[in-house]
Amino acid sequence: HSIIDRSIVEHEKQLSRITQLERKVLDLQSIIDRSRVEHEKQLSRITQLEHKVLGQQTIIVRLNVEYEEKLSIITQLENKVLDQQSIIDRSIV
Image 1 (tube, helix red, strand yellow):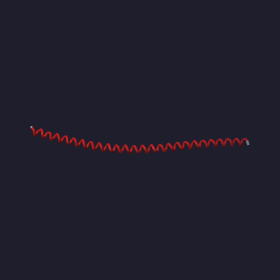
Image 2 (image 1 turned 135 degrees about the horizontal axis):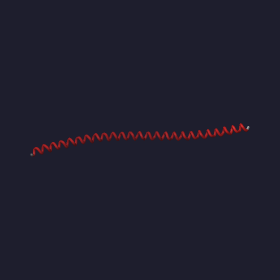
Image 3 (image 1 turned 135 degrees about the vertical axis):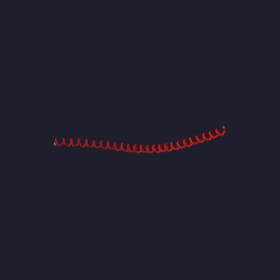
């Protein structure tokens, strides 16, 4: 009986150890799953921010184009004023 008893005790120890390891594996899997969910949330947030930045860049490009167009109009008006001033100056002389 002694050999059988020792075998049973050893077997129960191994079963206990297996149970502990299974719990540890489940705990680790739970941590991995939570980390994965958090990672997905962060990726989603990054994607949202990227879209926002692209939208802002589009606005900036459009504003720059409008600014350049207005600068061109101002330059044309300045040239027109200078031309008219030149005509006035010549007519006075």
